[in-house]
Amino acid sequence: MGELRDLYQEVILEHSKAPRNYKKLAAANHHAEGFNPLCGDRFTVYLDLEGDTVRDIAFEGSGCAISKASASMMTQSIKGKTVAEAERLFENFHKFVTTQNHAESDSAELGKLAVFSGVAEFPARVKCATLAWHTLQAALEDKQEAVSTE
Amino acid sequence: MTLATKTGLAPHPANSLAEIDVHSIRAEFPILKRKIYGKPLVYLDNAATSQKPRFVLDAIEDYYEKENANIHRGVHYLSERATADYERVRVQAQRFLNAAKSSEIIFVRGTTEAINLVAQTYGRANVGAGDEILITAMEHHSNIVPWQMLCGEKGSKLRVAPINDRGELLLDEFEKLLGPKTKIVAITHVSNALGSVNPVKRMIEMAHRRNIPVLVDGAQAVPHMSVDVQALDCDFYAFSGHKVYGPTGIGVLYGKTALLEAMPPYQGGGDMISSVTFEKTTYNKLPYKFEAGTPDIAGVIGLGAALEYVADVGLDAIAAHEHDLLVYATEKLSAIPRLRLIGTAAEKAGVLSFVLDDIHPHDIGTILDQEGIAIRTGHHCSQPVMDRFCIPATARASFAIYNTREDVDALVKGIRKVREVLG
Image 1 (cartoon, each protein chain N blue to C red):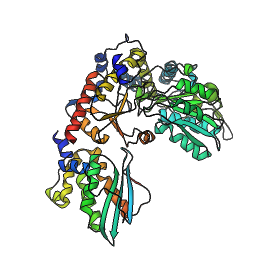
Image 2: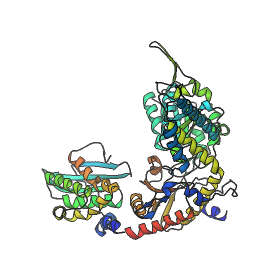
Image 3: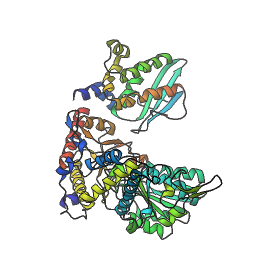
Image 4: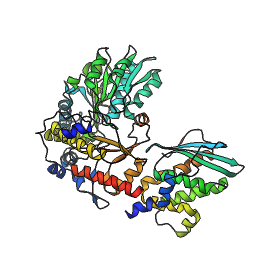
C-alpha cells in the first residue's frame, strides 16, 4: 500500500479528476497529438507561443490518472516559460521519473512536479507520466504525425 | 442454472458430471506457487497466454537433454527420433482438430503467422483489384492487418460485419456482406476482447453457399472448447500453442488439402523443396511445402505435450469448469456498483472485460498487480472493438483450467481496493 500511495499521491488524484487547462486552445499556433499504443492513452497539446515564450498551453484527450495528472501539472509548470526552459524541465522530469533514490536538489528544481517521485518504482508507468511531455516536444517541433511512446 | 439465467449467459452444454479437481491441477503448474510482492499469484491473464504445466516443461527439457537433433534429413539415431516425435505431434494436432489428414496440419509460429501465411499465399493468388475480404468487427489486429496489407497491395477492399451492444455478431448483416466480390472470409471463433463465441458453423455455411472459403482464427477457442474442423467445414483454422498450455513460438495452421495444394509456398528454403537446381526448384509435398527451414522442434514437442495434457483433463471438463467460473464472476462483478461489463454475449468463453467508473484500466491494472493479481489492461490488440464501445481500453480477466472461485473473490476484493486508493 505504501508504494501505491507514493504513486497515487493526493495531488495526482486531484489533478486527474479535475485537470487544469483542459480545453482546446483557440489561439494555439502549435499543437501535436501524442499516443501510447500500449494502453490507448491519447492527448493533444496546444501551445500559444509568443516568440520564444509559452504564452498559453492547454491539452485534451483521454488517459489514466498518471498521464492525465502529468499533463495537467505540465501545463501549469510550462506556462510563461521559454522553450529552452521547458525543454530543460522535461529533461529533468524524465530523469526524475526514471531514477530511484532522488537527491533533494532534484525535487527542489522540479517544484510541484516532484509528486511524481513514486513513478520510478513502477517502470510500466513511466510512459504514462511522460506522454504529455513527449507531446509537448512534438508540438514545439510542429510534428504532423501523432507522436508515439513506443 | 439459475445463476446462468441471471447473468444472461447461456447454460453450458457440457456434462457437469465431468468435474475437475482444480487443486490437484494447480499443483501441476509450478508458477502458481510463486508469490508476487509477497502475495500469492492470482493469474487471470490467460487470454494473453496460459501458464505451462510441469508435463510440458519436462517434455521440452527432455527433448534438449536427450534427443536434440535436426529433423527430416539425418540418418543418425537422434535425428530419426526427433523426426518421429515431431511428426507424431502433427498427428496429435490432426486429432485435436479432427482434421482428415495429418498433412493438412502446418506448423507455424502462431496464429498471427498462420493468418499471414494464408493472406500472402492464398490471398495474393486469389484476391484482386475490386475484390472484397470480409471480417467481423471483433477481430484481433492479427486478423485485420494481414488483410489490410493484402488490400493495399491488390487494390481490394476490407468489409467488416458489425456487432451489437452485447458484442454479438449480427448474422443477417454478415450474410448481406457476402457478395460476388467476396473472395475470402476471415473470422474469429472467440473474441479475445469480449469473449463472444461466434456462430462460425452457420457463418461458414453462408459463405460456402456462395463458394467463398473461410479462415477461422481459433486462438481463443481451442483452449476452451472442442473444435472439429470437418464438422465446421472451415477451409483454414489457426491457433497458437501458448494459449493452450504449450510454449510460445509454435502454432498450427490447418488447411483443406485441395486449397493447400493449389497455394504457392510461403517462404523458400530448406525442407520445403523436393529438388533444387539453379534453373528450377520443385516444391515438396504437403505439409512440408509450407515449412521452410529448421522449425521450432522443441516448441512442437512442447505443443504435443500440451495437447496430450488437455486431452487427459478433457476439454469438456475444462469448458464446464471455466463456464462455472464465468457465471460466478459475471454475477460477482455485476454486483459492483458502477462497474460495466464490456461484452455480454449469451454465448461466451471465459473472458470478462470491464470498465469501472471513469477509472482508467491502466490504473486498475497497477493496483491489482500490487495485490498479486495479473489481468490485462488496454485495447487487447482490438482497437476497433474499443472504438465500437466508445472506450479507450478495458480491464480484462480471463480464465483457465487452474483458476478458482477464490481467484474471482480476490479480483472482487482487488477492485474494492482500486476504489479505496483512487477514491
